[in-house]
Amino acid sequence: MRETLIDRIYEAAGTPEFWPDVLQCFGETAHSDGGVLMVLPPAGTPRWIASPSLERRLRHHTDAASWRGSGRTAQWRALAQGSFVRDVDLLPGSYDGRSSRVDEPFWQVGTTIPLPTGDVAIVTAERRAEAGPHEAGLLPRLDALRPHLVRACRLGARFGSGRARTTTTALNRIGLPAAVLSASGRVLAMNARLEEQDEILPSGQHGGLLFKSLANSKLLQDAIADVVAGRRAAQTMPVRGYADRRARIAHILRFDRHPGDVFDASAVLLILVQVGARAAPDDGLLHLLFDLTPAEARLLQALAGGLRLQSYAESVGVQTSTVRTQLTSIFNKTGTKRQAELLSIVASLSMFSGPSAPC
Image (cartoon, rainbow, N blue to C red; front, side):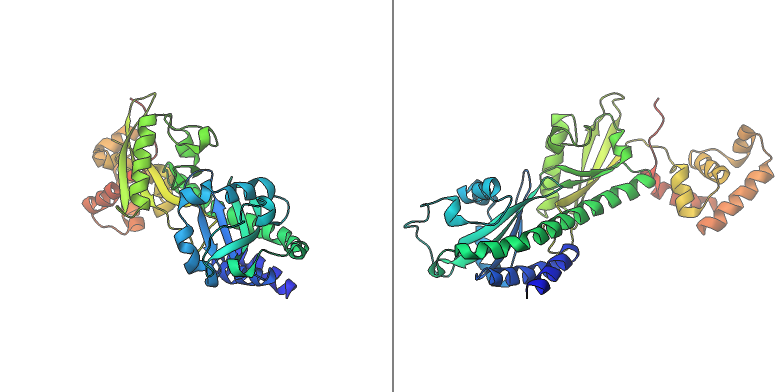
């Protein structure tokens, strides 16, 4: 039984939808009604998942302020980091005479697990009031499971943060400054192109905030709130740079997590676009999308900027026939037949351009 539960704990690390059944088995091991896994971020709303027998009963207990501010939660974080602890040992005497409904979770035994993301996981087994507190003799059995729960929770947290990094890295390759943020606005992943922007705070500093400007931060938080609450599918906001004073636009989009993944705090994807960016994408994106050679990419950028074939040929010192051959190759690679059709595609990709040269 124990070995089977351990195997399932590790399976849940990579397959979040397994956690409810794992928590149910964990609760039964603790002679309880079920189990709960709650993740507390440094700021914002806790995320939680429970065994099927507890999920409905616990739903009305998920108010962020009451969970975070409760003495019980504070004691878990302070005293249960190395082993499982009973609630009656955390706050001795605090449950004497406390009213309760017999069908609601009341007694707990649990442990806390610091995560590499800065969040804290709390794993508890829950009993109804009528069953009485957990027996002290259960603690060694639960402590034997704790190392496996720690590894699984930390693996789950790394999987979530890895997905955010993969997303921003992919956008970096096509020239888009981007970040993945939590619902509270904390930066979870940021790519190199965004870090280069003068209005962006260094990664990992100032509590995970993104912008130097308080005004930009307030606009961002309002936009995130609208997207997370479902009031808007996406939001845009103006962002003004510090050094060059160029206006930029931030697009904030919902970043959907894996269903049931309580470790992944990702809530929104932010993409920063410069107003008045060049008319054509940069060489890297054109090569990535269409396999254009550097010479073909330069020709396409020139055409998008308004130059005629002959003028471009003269500017680079080649025959017009050479440029026409390059244009024919571009048509073949992009699946277009006319210059107007080609430039229409380029215009649709203009938001993917890299940073423009300063004036």
